[in-house]
Image (cartoon, rainbow, N blue to C red):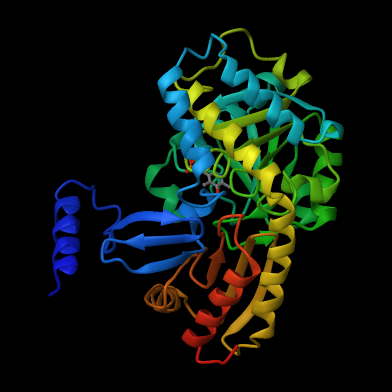
Length: 397
Ligand SMILES: *Cc1c(COP(=O)(O)O)cnc(C)c1O
């Protein structure tokens, strides 16, 4: 065994002494540079996983690193009840990116996707005085007890029942089921505009437009979970913008801090006004360090035109995948750099073979591989990813 292999084994053994057993890692990453990430044996990978759609501006970004370091020397935290100059700067940058036509003018800050989704449930309850929620089959909104009720996958949900509320699950893109599900007890309909974990399915425009009309007519709210699809990933700042609807609330998290934990719940004036003062809060929400990171991410977006890159390179990526004409592939779908490739068989062996070929991806369900690379990925890098996939599938690209 080489020295680096011995070191990797030793690190994994030390990790295994303390991890909970939820996962059994067999790789140790040590550093990254742009779309590339390196393991403890010096192997290089093209990272199409990005910490699961998180490292939006890639690894080792100098602007982000500098912003975090400078903010850390100045001020890391004040309570959520106080303002910081950095939080003000973040608010203004954020709302410059969100189209004013959506009417989303207020934000509650937290530190993860589940946490902002939980906050959205509380705001929905207090704003409507109702208790029920409608969500979609194959939907994923997080794993904490408060949002588990929105997450459809029974293996994530059932061992932890009873949950604090009952959700009516409808077929995604099924307008008849949507129509039947929204009652005068529905506080909100909670949907991802592109289902991530559930297999990378974009919504049909008519489905989301009907959800908007029906919720408005029946006194319920419409909440878009953009924890994965938001912050430029689909080629618009919010995936919701592709659909021409104005939701009452939108949640963001994964890509917003470039890897630094942050979550944001956007809402209208009307919804914000319904929460009594002090009715919700979280210790780390809106801290200056995370705010500085998110400001740097949004600056990098502007400097490198990354939302346009996500749209262009995302379309190119899908085109190249289609050109493979691989008989193993059933379908290719997605929006921007949120791409799913559905295979006719289970994908675990393909994910493993890709890793051996130097491409890091994650599945989305048993038969779908998801490509959620940093938004800085270039067409040349996409060519290389597709060439390696083609090698794995035994095709010439
Ligand atoms: C990842 C994800 C969540 C949960 O976010 P955490 O930060 O893991 O709590 C919620 N909704 C969607 C759509 C996600 O992809």
